Length: 115
Length: 113
Image (tube, rainbow over all chains, first blue to last red; front, side, top):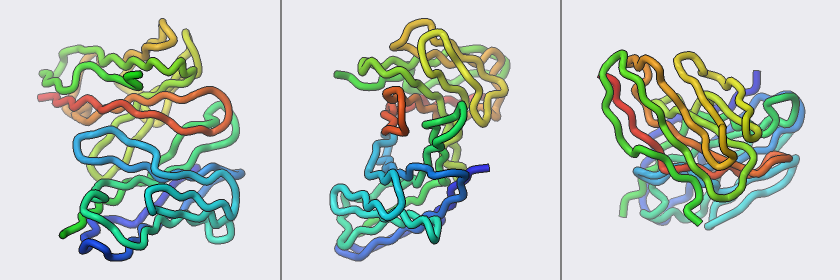
């Protein structure tokens, strides 16, 4: 079945460091791909998304490119801030059958940014 | 707009007790979802609804029931709670069609003793 695998954390970085969180997927067809972020004590909120191959999603300095050839959607940010400390979830949305639009999540990666 | 709200925020139950979690959304969304979040497991779909009066099973439906009597509300019931149902529960909603963004509530932390 469809699945998402993302790098395990926790990840600890110093402020202004470069961030990469790896995400790969297995899916039938052509899923949409998402990164959601969960700040402490809150629900998830959409960070960025991409709906087809080679699309780049971007928001708040974060970027991810939909790579069909490597089935990947890695999250990157050039200079992290303390306020980026959160748990990041990679997810895919199926595009077929009765479960169209349902999200399948990776296990999450906790990021801590130190001043 | 309040978005997606969940009631209650916290709850402690004893094994065998029952309870209902309420999710409400004011965005006129057709689709609604219930997930559970467990450490190291990500979010897993329990049940979902594609419109008023409809429900469907997700990945981990056993031990839960749901109802969608009104478009804006999606209820999750535990008839006989078990310690394995200790988790954080999230509700989400989205517009119909396509594969659009899901909007999440703040969560309910449930502990079953």
